Image (cartoon, rainbow, N blue to C red):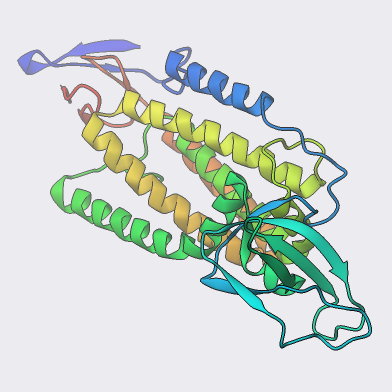
Length: 337
């Protein structure tokens, strides 16, 4: 290793190998996020393996459609369904509880009837299939799943548009903006974040395509605890926990390595890349062979790219941070030539 002094008082340190000091080391803030996430993980609720039905008497729901009509009198065996009995309506946002269930084999529409109660004065019967498509379980995880399933495409379109605008603005406004994969920072967290996000998307889509009944059971009996679940659900929840931890670690590293403005722009571009990867692997999950090959190639490309990107040849003569090339230091602004 040698240190070369040039004109105008500028310094640059060149080294053939940079060992020992590595910019991707865990900072104290990253350790804090890891500890905090682990506490949430360990304190998450226990998943009962006895929950084998979608819902039970006493379960609470919220109406997510404009309204449904309830039949005041119960259906009777061996008699046609009474269409002349009194009906009452419940409306969007009403809290409902399952009061009773009844099986009518003679009913050609749906043999299962459910008695719902909004309060002690408003209760009635409805077919099970009308009930299930009109309500969401009164649980924050189920509500998030429901909201995500109906809103994510519009939200993704907005976020991708913002990310593209930010990328173009950086390209035309400065010479080399920090962008994931193209001009990345010297940290492994963004790479592993995108890999984990892609794996989570692939698992999520695979569950919905190939074992939808397992996903429906989880939707009505959600938990944050990955233990005691079917294997594919356990893998998916583990990937979600790892994703959250990596997201916190990535944000901490980006703000540590870049100025605040550049860090925000980098995270926006990283968000756009993550959304594109999510869409790609949810579509690829339709074919198990294609999705497996695609994910394996994607994994290798990102790892090889990070390996090449992390081999910095220079150290800044002002702040000592690692640099891939000479020029303006992105960390302190000093010129290195």
